[in-house]
Image (cartoon, rainbow over all chains, first blue to last red; front, side, top):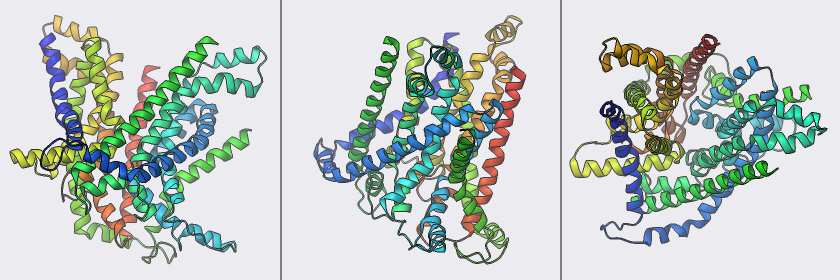
Length: 273
Length: 262
C-alpha cells in the first residue's frame, strides 16, 4: 500500500521540484553571481540604486490595496446580507470579469481614459475642461483597483458568510447597538478574510508591469517594469533581474509576515476578551 | 439602508462591467474609431476569422491549454489522492509546495522559469523556448488548482468503497479507476476547466517562457503596443462569451452537486 501511495505523489513532487523549486533556487543563485560565475553582492547593491522605483511600487500597491479595502468591504458585507440564493449569483458576477482577459480589460480602460476618450467626452459634454488622465499615477492605481477588487471582496465575503449568526444575536441580546456589534463582533470575525484580501490585492499590484505599461505609458517605472527590462528589454541582465526579483520576493514575504502577525495578534485579543 | 446597499452594489457592478461592455460595443462599430460611433457592422468579426496571425495564435493557445489542462489534471488528481493518504508532516510539506506558485508573484514565476529553460537549453540542448516550455509552465501553475478542487471531493468520498472493491477481488488500479474516479469526477472536471481557462488567459508567465510562439494574450499585448485594430474588440467579445459560457457550466455543475448533496 505504502509503495503505491508514494507512486501517486512522485510525479507531482518531481514536477514541482523541476519547475518550481529549482527555478526559484536559480533566481537566488543568479542574484549572487557575476556573468563570469563568481560570487558577488554587486547585483543586490546595484539593485538598491532603484530604491525610488521600489518605493513607488510599494506606495502604488498600498494605495490600491487600501482603496480596494474601503470599496470592497461594504460590497462583501452587502452581498452577505442578501438572500442565499442571490448570493451565489452575485459571486459569479464578481468572478466573470476576473476570468475575462486581464489585458483586454486594461486595454478597455486605455480607451476610456484617453485624452479624447469616452470619459473626457462625458466631461466635455457637461461643459468641463478635459482632464489628462492616461499616463498618470492615478491611472495606474485605478487599473490596479479595477483588476484586483474582486480578490478583496471574495475572501471577505467568505469570512462574513461563514460567521455564526447567533453571535450577532447574542450581542444584540446583551444590548449592543449596531455600531458596537460591527466594531466588536462582525469586523474582528471577518479579519481573516480582510487579511487574505489584502495580500491577494497587494502582491499582484506591487509586482505588475502590464498595468503600468498600458495605463502609465511606460514613463512611470515600477518594480515589474525593472524586472521585465532585465529579461526581455534592452538592458538584458538576468543577474540584476534576479537580484531585483529576490528583493521583490523579500518585500512580499515581509508584508505577509506582518499580516500574519496582525492576524495572530487580533485572534489572541479576541480570545482574551 | 436596503436601497442604499442596492445602489452601492449596482455601482460596483457597473464599475466592473463598464469596460467590458465598452469593448463589446465597439466591436460592432463601423469605423476604426474607438470613440465615435458610426453605425453597426459585423465586419471585424469576419476579418478576425480571415486574419491568419490571430487564427494561428488561437490555434497555439488551444493546443497549450489542452495539453497543460490534461497533464495538470492527471498530476493533480494523483497528487490529491497521495496527499490525502500521506502522513501529517508530508502533507504539510506538499501543501506548502503547492501554495508556492500561488503566493509567488507571477512575474517572478515567469522569470525563474525563463532562467531555468534557457539554462537547460544551453547545457543539454532541449527545452528550446516554444510550445513545450510554455505548456510545462502552464501545467505548473494549473496543478495547484486541480489539487484544490479534487481534495474536497476525496474528503467527501467514502474510502470504504475502495477497500470493498479490493475485498471483492478487484486489483487496486482497477478499483481506483472503477470506484474512486467516478466519485471524484466532478472535482476533476472542475479542475480541468479551471486549468483550461487559466491557461487561455495567462499572459505574464507566457510572456517570459516560450520565445516567439504566438498565443492570443501575447498577440493582444503586442497589438495594444502598436496601432490597435477593432479586430481585438471582436476577439475580446468572442473570448468573453466563451469564458462566460464555461463559467455558467461550472456553476451549474456545482449547483447540481449541492442539490444532490441536500
